[in-house]
Length: 98
Image (cartoon, rainbow, N blue to C red; front, side, top):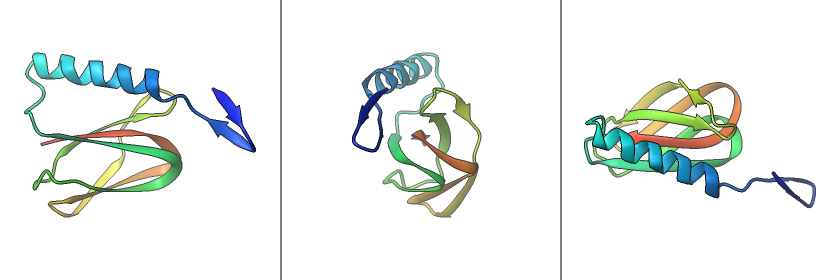
């Protein structure tokens, strides 16, 4: 972790590269369906609202900034929006796959 000013600044590059490699591996084994959207949540929040263009209610995989896979509560207000709810504020990435 790098520090800058008053708060931490994260180097997301290794984290993103690892997740992209996991997604490619999942597609090779048949888990992926070809339609996906990646959401980065750099500021910790207990609720992530994700607007996507998948035109469906996609499956969601969440990896926290610390590298843990999480299982949020997921709501779909419509086919272009997913709302992820966590027990505490978190930063990380969400992979939506349709």
